[in-house]
Image (tube, rainbow, N blue to C red; front, top):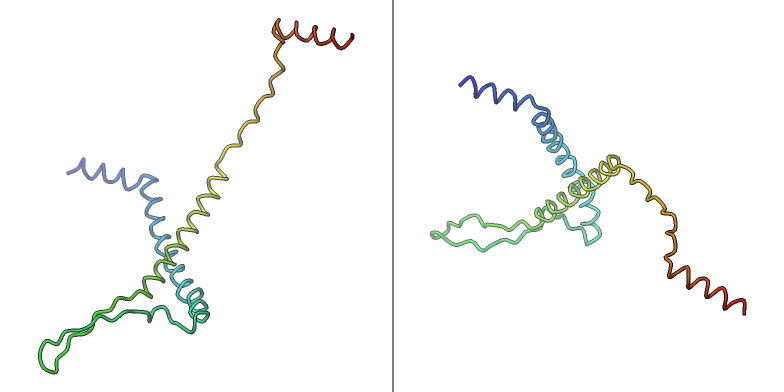
Length: 140
């Protein structure tokens, strides 16, 4: 049991585990911010533009079956408006993560060394001979 606790302590104190825990906590808070942004800022104007629709109210009600005379089950609904809002949440989060990773990669990328310009190669004997012939023909 002592070896297990020692290994767990090493794992928990490693930088990667702590960084991951901080990332999860910040990610949860970031998710709430994005949800609020989508629910409270983005979706109301979109709903207004398409005729005053509140996306969280969009749903399809499935027919309920009668169990006994006068007693009815609560109707099940497919809440596609909530799904649309959740999908937009995901897209905003994915865009933010993409932009953040792109910026980090740009910062961490090492500048590529400029390719060295090679000196022109010495002409081969054939090329030398052809050049001499060309120059002689120009003179005539």
